[in-house]
Length: 156
Image (cartoon, rainbow, N blue to C red; front, top):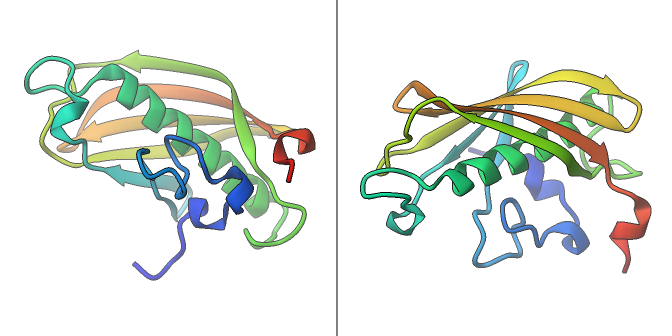
């Protein structure tokens, strides 16, 4: 894929997140892209992401929904303002609320697909709905309330 992922636009001072930071060698390093009006992340859990044999740990699923949601929030804000993702000032978001519903056990061994939709943009807040799919079956659903990161977080 030649298109840059949302996370590829994160400057180094905010690229350390365990879920989406490309500077975190031990993290998930997820990559999220637009597909029309939805956002998509694909992630293949490793055997160490086990909850019980054969199934993915729920905390991993929550972290994927979380980081997918904050990346989607940033991309949605740029899109709403008709701006390129590398334009200034940067939009970076943190999680104010995360609600995850586990619909069924998520099997380990295949690729997971996380699909998101923007539910609302209001001021500094973006609400994103996300669904995790394993082999085309919805296994978890989440809602992320993301707020624009305070400039004091950006530091130097």
